[in-house]
Length: 450
Image 1 (cartoon, rainbow, N blue to C red):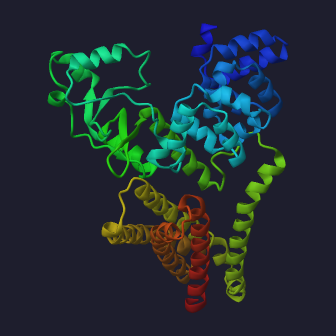
Image 2: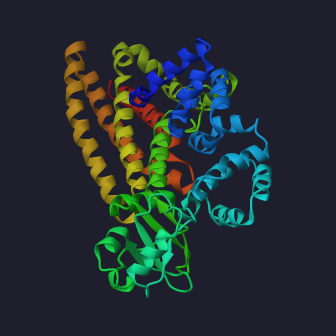
């Protein structure tokens, strides 16, 4: 079974299916028990629904909570529909409070209430402290289980205190120093504690430079702080600087992964939690929205073309070449749009530098527009022996690239103002703009110059 650890996800999946097909369910169970809960979750998501339920039934009860947390929301909801409140509580009872909160926030309100009511008082209070904050904030990410000490005790006292604990919270790289009112003062790194004399006081060796994270800041900001400061864990405080909990690197990795998945799926108009093996009707309904939107934008572009029917009939060469212009504009606009969305995500863009970015992108598009306008001018003039067609196509190229870059900058700004995700809707709107401007530029210039 040790060979299983060195296999890729695809190999593990194939081995599991082979065991299921041969009817060796005991072998399937042994294979599952040898895996990490995250790997079991990957196998469940990669399996069609019938096999998915079989894998879940064979998952050890001790692993169920961690497996559920690792699953996408769609897949998790399908599994918990078959579980009662007692089974849910039993599955999540050993999870960290931040993971427990993430799990509960995906459940219907009635089920959240039932699950909380079935918990003991201490767990319920700690969990409610996390649930009080939006899941996309530092407070919603934090784990309330912390190890704290006072500043006026010696390192020897701290060491003896730690030895009495059954275990330390996961990813503990420092001890949080607080005053008698639980207000944050600083951190005591474990490395500092182990390399200093036992009689030294905490106040003399603790670090005060690391600022705590406010509970209400967005999860994306938290991820950026961890990246910039190379953190493994960080304390979370309220507006009065009172310690609430801590965030650890494993939670931040989850945020980074979710953001990456969201960006990739949104560009295709898909939900980042969409189940790979969701029912056909549900998948078709979700995708139909964006297909319908794209159809409407394509019809708008077609209507623009229809307004220049006489021009097209008189110049066949335009019908051959004009598709090049919106295509080039779409690529240029997408480049700018992606750059701006990334700038917003990393906190690099604001009112102070937006004008500079717009100027830079317009100059880049103007330079590329002139270069590729000359190229298409030469090709069109040589291929069709018509100087006028080459001039029309070249000028239209410059106009559309300038429109594309401007749209790539302004669309995310406008959409953010109306609380629309530019990663989700920006591409559709941008394509519409570059199609309309591209066709209108070609046909309009042709009507004027030819």
